[in-house]
Length: 143
Image (tube, rainbow, N blue to C red; front, side):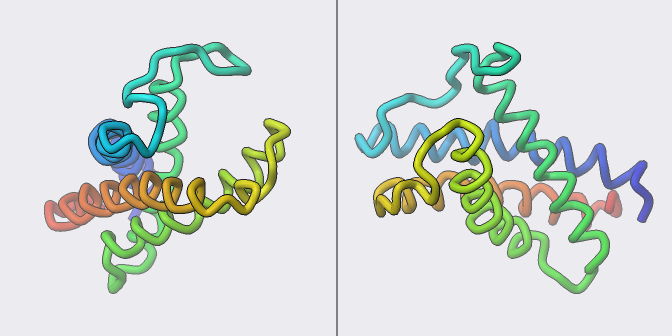
C-alpha cells in the first residue's frame, strides 16, 4: 500500500474519530460530572493559538496516519484492536510523558488514578473510532 493512500485515509480517520468518538466521550464524561470542560472547546491553545478542537483534530489526524500505516502493513491485524491499543496505550503514555513534560505538568498524570481512567476512556474512544473508520476503509479497498 502506498503512502498516497495511507496518509489521507489515516488523517481523515483520525479527524473523524476526534470529532465523533473523542469529543463524544468528553461530552459523556462532562454530563456525568467526571470532567469539568464540555466537548468542542474553541479556546486558543499555545504555541500557535489555534482553537483546541482544531489542535486535537490535527494531532488525531497524525495518530490516524500512524494507525493506518500499521494496519496496512499488517493485513491480518484488526484495525479496531490496533486503533484501540494506540488510543488507550500509546496516546495516553505520550500525553502523560511527552506532552506533560513539555507543559511542565506532573509526569505520568501525577499517578492520579482519576486522570488515568479518564485519559484511557477518552483516548481509547478515539482509538476505537480510528479503528472503526479504518475497518470500513479496509472493507472498501481504500487501505
